[in-house]
Length: 120
Image 1 (cartoon, rainbow, N blue to C red):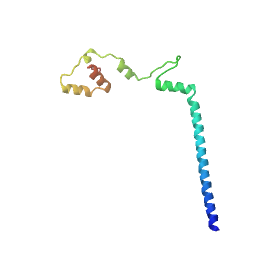
Image 2: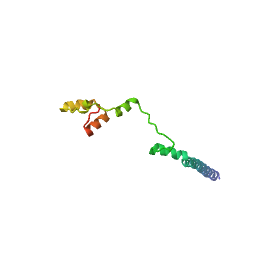
Image 3: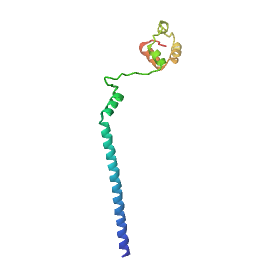
Image 4: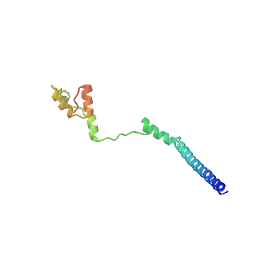
């Protein structure tokens, strides 16, 4: 008799524990569904679509103006013309070219290799 009572209580305990697990899982799933609904509602707004278009595809609205802020050094680097003396320099030996390349930035090296111009 004691064995049957203990066996019954043990199976009842197991069933109740399984039911509790299922209810917790259901609650977590319902919370995730609610969060997903809120996320989808947010992603369907015009503000979010506008934000994505501006961030990923570099688009702007008709009334907006785009201003790029860069440092003055970068502006001067790409807008100043090089003197003819520097542009005409062609290294005479391999050592001259290596010393020339060691003083150049990566951008200057690309220009030098592609167009064979020294823009320093």
